[in-house]
Amino acid sequence: MFKKLILITFVLFTPSAFASDWSFGEFFSTVDALATNVTTFFFDDVPSLLDRIMAYFFEFLIYAQIKTTIYAMQTGFTVAKLIVSDFGIVQMVETFAGQLPADIRHAAVKMNIFSAFNLIVEAYIARFVISYL
Image 1 (cartoon, rainbow, N blue to C red):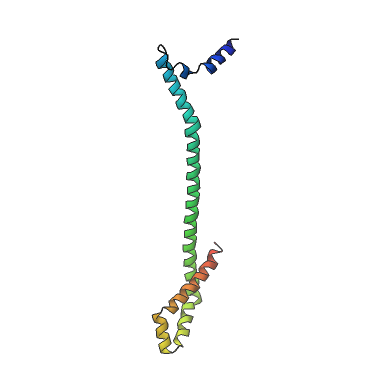
Image 2 (image 1 turned 180 degrees about the horizontal axis):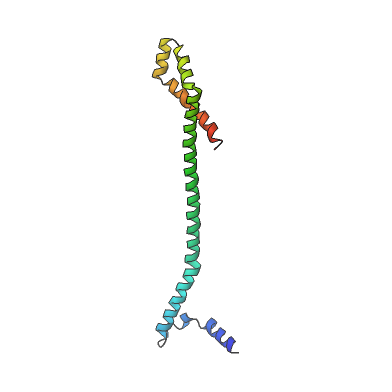
């Protein structure tokens, strides 16, 4: 019987019901403010904190993936340049360019056709190398 009376007292007569009472007004206002702060903390702030933690975690993962991709591309391009220099592709292009007539060779040098060809070859080799990284 006593337990039911306490339960009914706490359910029906919440601290906010006594907050405007002239004798216990300040005490019940403080208790009501405390209860409001506790419920706000558990039902608003904690889920918001968990959302922010998950957002920071995924942001870190995306940042790490982007940095890893950039590093892989830089490494692949460096390896591709080494492969191009080891195969002597630049020397072969220069050899073939030397066999061209002088006016065509001069026009190709002015238009940077040989540099563009070297860049395209390095890009294809870099793509090949990056596929293994």
